[in-house]
Length: 286
Image (cartoon, rainbow, N blue to C red; front, side, top):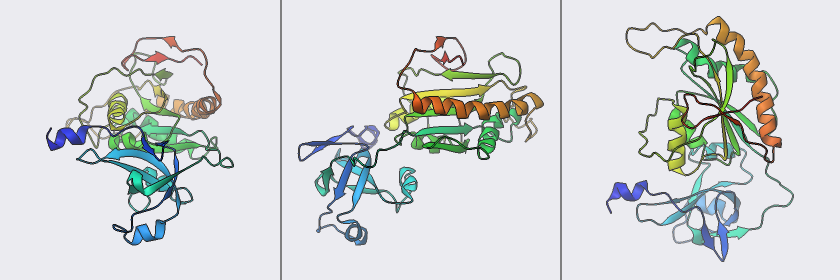
């Protein structure tokens, strides 16, 4: 097996340490080996951390990616930034019981996506801007991802229970029409990596190959007045059309309602079937 084939292999979902299954969300105490300890290891020895992922190197050896439980910048570690995310072997951690006094809240990601220089394609970005001015339920992260598909794929590796994409998508409706969809991914593989592209289905497939996607995935899309593709003969357009701009306010209110339902729900009837642009999608009537 060559190097790149080994690197494409996913790490295990969990490893067993002292008879305990340790995986994403597990609490552990760090016990770095003195033989390899550096200044960070000396400072982190004995600290409590939370496992974010189980990854493996080119030899297939598993390593635990962890963030410190009490790190105020823990979200930076979840975003894979150095200084807040650390790697330890299974032999360098002690499994701990869940903290009964610190129940982890349900987390939901609202991802605004689109290109603000392509007219109505910037709908998702505008909705996120409006959400900055309203109160959203606790545990909800509202992020403008723009066209940063790789960043979004990595963000989906976090312990989100659900993600709500906000996007512009032509579906043959009247301009400004809002539709809530639940896409279903096929088993198609071989996802090309586009660091500055944003196709929600492609991003979901890439995230799945990286390790996980949230259990619940919804897309709130708006029918654009016109579709720009960014070709050389097109002019830059930084404004939304009137129907789409008018829909952005209603979309922001709808996002707040949807994420509240996602947090509160414990299962319910499935959405109605409806064909459309996203493969295997289902339309969720509200």
